[in-house]
Image (tube, rainbow, N blue to C red; front, side, top):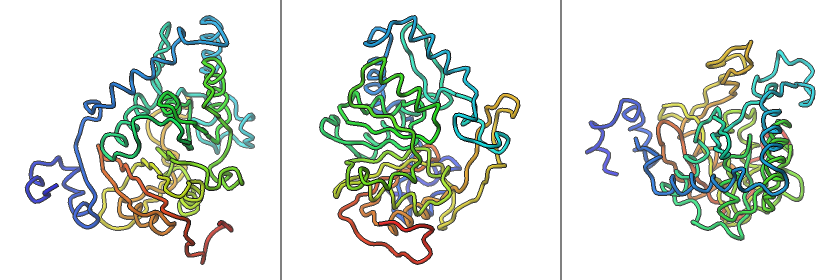
Length: 322
């Protein structure tokens, strides 16, 4: 991209990122992801998960079970002591992604972001091939499984994890109802991905919309580096801070957005939000190479390669890690 020719035609939020693009060779675009080639294809793949495709239950029982999830409010099943200190979305169930089940449809909190995220990684960053047959994906923070369902439809074997038990239970039900053999949902924290079965195991890690929800970004990124096989890639999507400095902005659990405490539907609940420069530097420091970032509609889409396993600086790490 010849930045000097396009800067004056950019929206204001892109102009603020101009210096970032120059200093780190980060590509910035104001693009409609819905217009990209893979968007319609991935949208159509979601039609594989409608009541016409049910295997282990019928349409009536399926809808009833989904409706039961939608009214679920339970902090004890998450092992919380004080619900007032916890995230609304962990206490009360909220469907994550838009899903047309055929007989009925659900509007998720994230809309069609599951489709947009995979479309951006496929069409803008060329992160993975059209067919994922024989590939293993680790989907971090899967929520109700929108991205996991598409990846399975593309042929991948997917291990989908989330720390919120109620969302994993809903995805387990979708796996059962549609008999999705290549999908394995597990209730796990990212920090538990140090178990032996995670090491050197995955061709891809999808880490979308999660980085700003974790307290230890360096350890989180190193854990996922270790989960990849040599030659594997991380696909990382995150909110970002519009700065050309390597900074993290602290938010904390008291900073919430939209919704109300009464309805248990507030957003926010973030810890640290990185600038694009900080994100790439952290990824380099834990071992990733060939890092590429595109900023699309104000969010970072970044890929990094684990070429081979390398050590990292261990001074000051909060835990012992390979």
